[in-house]
Amino acid sequence: MEKRLGFVGLIIEDRESNAATVNTLLSEFGDMILARTGVPCPERNCSAITLVIDATTDQLGSLTGKLGRVSGVSVKSMLSKMATP
Image 1 (cartoon, rainbow, N blue to C red):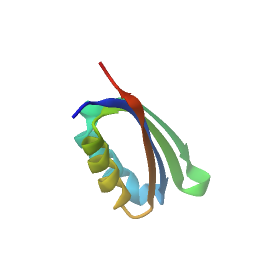
Image 2: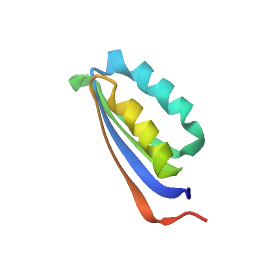
Image 3: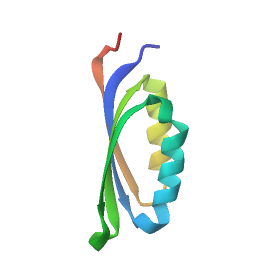
Image 4: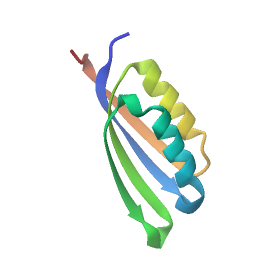
């Protein structure tokens, strides 16, 4: 299966309770993450993370599925139509 460029957007509620779990999962999939940007919102006890990835649809599904099962985490993703060289 071919890899494609894409992104994953995360909103993490109850940041203090969920950040460690999310970071552990992101480390597991670190080989497909090209860039990561995080914005904490301490006054709302949440944060937003955007990932740029190079992954197959199966890899993306595995990552987003695991993240989506974490309580308080919302996740959305998209892959490009064209495979990466």
